[in-house]
Image (tube, rainbow over all chains, first blue to last red):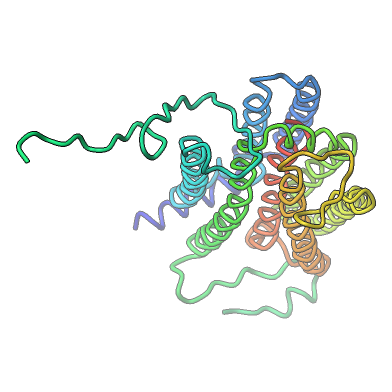
Amino acid sequence: MSIANESLKEEREMREERHTGPAKYVMVWAALLVFTVVTVVTGRMHLPEWGLILALTIATVKGTLVALYFMHLADHKGANRLVFVTSIAFVALLMAFSLFDLGTRFRPALPSGSTPPTWPVEIEQSGRYGGKLMAPKPTMEQ
Amino acid sequence: MQSNPTADAVGAPPPPKLAMHFASLEVQHHAARLGMWLFLATEILLFAGLFTLYAGYRFLFPEAWAAGSRSLDLTMGTINTIVLITSSFTAAMAVHYAKEAKNKMVVLMFVLTLAMAGAFLVIKGFEYSHKLHVGALPGFRYHYDAIQLPGAPLFFTVYWLSTGLHAFHVIVGMCVLAWITTKAAKNQFSYHNYTAVELGSMYWHLVDLVWIFLFPMLYLV
């Protein structure tokens, strides 16, 4: 009856509002507004390299606050958390591998007019396919 | 399934209905939440496609992305962010009041949420009409003279698709919340029975969650 136990625990936490009383909601709301101001101010500075990372970090913190307290993930149990975390993991996989592909592709194979930055991917486009892959060397035995 | 018509007559919220295939009400609530989280996971993956499109083309066309991002109206975007975060807060408060069986407050909170959702769409509409006017349209319809860079039409394709899909979710969320508001107006929610309010509110928070990421991606960096 572990499922039933888990359900009871979740029910109790949702009722008691251990994590999410109205005072918590107000605090989360205030924090979200503060983070919005911070991200707008830093975004307007157009920081050259860290702007994107900073903005995404702030957005992730805001998103975590919303998920944990407004969506009650902090009170939910087991499978509910697993579903959310799994979906986020697959979003990361999809984005990361799409970018790996574009970042390591033979440059002339990218769309015309595109000017991708060389950083962070350093590729030696010496091989036949743009990577380091070389044609096999003929062996002496044959 | 049980029904209690006398409960409505005296004005108390009706008792919760337990479906026969659940062991208890707690298990039923847990299952309802799990179902909602599964649905929200598919929603997240739906938006993930657009986020990947954004990441890929941003990598390929950094100049067009910077120029396109700076051409968007940051003031309107910031106001919309604050409006949506506040609407998310009132939706969370609605769940709190539903648990305390204060259905009138649930109605008030959801009406506030709906009003802010409407304000969000109106502001978005002003932005869209400006884009239509200057020709910052997706794909081959692009004829915005101020930004003529390779990849600029792609930025606005991603802009229209992602904000458009998000606006569609706002409209769907408004319909869902309006429906739950009518239930709250009939004094249906209480300590034992607030699943509809909770799940409707979760959907609204997801709409907010998506915007929390869309806003810096499109307007700021």
